[in-house]
Amino acid sequence: AIQRTFSIIKPDATKRNLTGKIISKFEDAGLRIVASKRIQMTREQAEGFYAVHKERPFFGELVDFMISGPVVVQVLEGEDAIAKNREVMGATNPENADAGTIRKEFALSVGENSVHGSDAPETAAEEIKFFFSDDEIVG
Ligand code: CMP
Image (tube, rainbow, N blue to C red; front, side, top):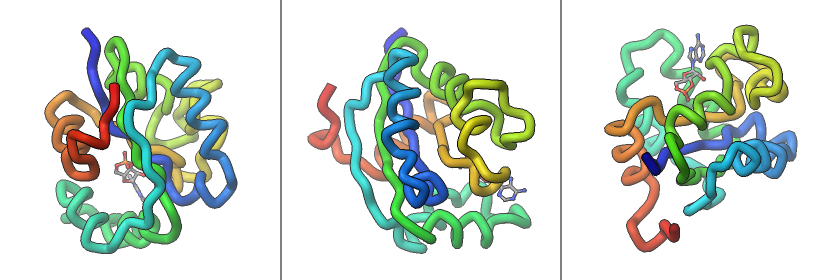
């Protein structure tokens, strides 16, 4: 089925000028960019977005990293978009990512791993709503 998923191009990638190369990977996989904006996340936004991880030992580091520079938040649309995006991203830890994936090619570490993508339909819907209003998404 056609789905929408939420993506973040993280500060390690925007700082190294990799935005276009990452978007090409999405488009080459058949995902359409139906919403996109470059933003500087506030600490409050980053803490809210990652609230599910707030008891994890890396939470502080994660929030500091996500506000360390600009990010590009996007809505990707396509057939099985959630799974397809996860395939294109590769494993969370770049050491475990398959050849040709975004994280294998570009990620620096498990924290500075270049991209975030939703893991399920419910989280995709929540994450899209966190950053986009309906009129900002043009399919
Ligand atoms: P993301 O998909 O954005 O969701 C949570 C993030 O936490 C994850 O990607 C990783 O970048 C980050 N993360 C997971 N494990 C660690 C870790 N051990 N140290 C730092 N960051 C981590």
